[in-house]
Length: 389
Image (cartoon, rainbow, N blue to C red; front, side, top):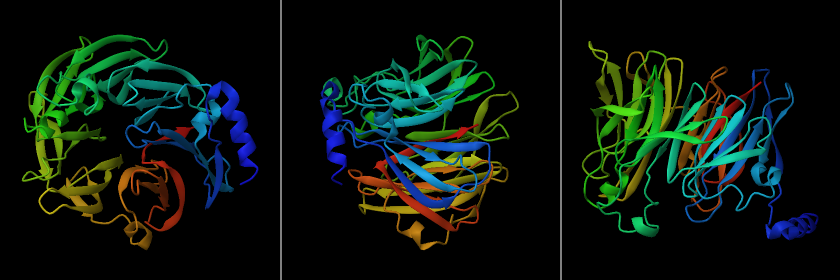
């Protein structure tokens, strides 16, 4: 470790900002020839710690070992003030650009997808998630200050409605916005409509009741045209190849349990609830007919957390597997916090946040669930995106 300290001292003198050096870790896993050449992993970092960081999994060298590059953003952008920022909330690639939604820093960082070198940023208050269509990014935002900070400290009824901001992906300028429900989370675009999962998280924490709707926004007018009643405290929202939407409800942590719903078009073309499964789903990834998930159900009554894994067939709406792997390593995951599945080979990755304040882990499993390797990440690994050739 002696050779690292001179580097730290030198980088600390540059603009008085300490740049933590990147780590190159050989996972021991083998790469497979594919159009997917890598994967970015955004670590959230504990709120208030300014420790969001970006890692990169190099899958480009066919037949060679897989390398994990830990903490690449600060190393490749050493002059960026406060590095990446506070609480990374979403990671997406659109075209040749990498989009990183940094929640508590009230910004969206945009970098070159090929090497994570910074292009610029978009200032958006309390931003959450992003979706893209026709050269525009649509970013969900709580609008008000982060809960527990500043004017939002009491979390009272003064909390404003959330919004979705429309951003030109080339100029990185905000061009429009639309008010939706309270504390909107994930967003999905189908045809020319934007669907937004509203949580009402601030209201729920103060006893005013969670939101329970999915907002529908017409992209031509950027106006909310409908609200679909689903369940309290919505979070994840994804589309499958059949044009269905899958939305998760976190419930109220008391008598209303976490579950997952699917939305379908009725005879008039309006999206409506098609049904639900009494299965907690905290995060998911859809590949073909398979919805891979893990669910973490917290009970305020028993003060315990129950974790489950499985696969749902999106065509039949049935849980076809109650396990992702029989490997003992999956049982050692302390707090699953993210999942992503390779859309070509169907090997998959699980992210373990551990204790939330120290390094997490990324675990790789083969398509049949066989454990392959694991590696240390930044704090709270949670969001990932594959990079294609």
